Length: 220
Image (cartoon, rainbow, N blue to C red):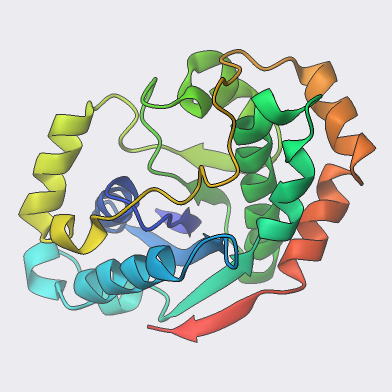
């Protein structure tokens, strides 16, 4: 099919999305965003465990995972960048900004590895950044095509898939992406306001480049 950068959160959804993408013929370059030191290393540890599990599933997954899954996880620290979006004038859009930062960083990674798509575990309406309006605001941050193989599934169906894959138990743990998030979130982002807020704290691309410059590569 092609080459994609896979956004791996350490949660239940992203390993399922990764498995479905590789089964469909995509080569996957996994990318994880770390919120340390605001949080601990647990999300990265869960990401590593689930990817290592998928890497050992050649026969069960139906494809040669060793040829599909890049054996290196790129970890990008984003706590410093995301702290900029906790001001009162932009905090309610925090999760939209977060996903826009993620997609912009993913584009930088894609440019290096020759990927044409970004893979996410998003499913419609599960959280505030995944409303139809906010998904549009998020995907505007990249010119890459977005792969969302779980978009139409509800959480119970995704959980069943994770159990069947054997990644469910490896992915259980507290959510860390919302460590700096607001109590009340915007469900329909305004493009002009988002761009003005990002410009006010340094510009989306420059913020992404700063985070990307601090990346580390971890062998699986």
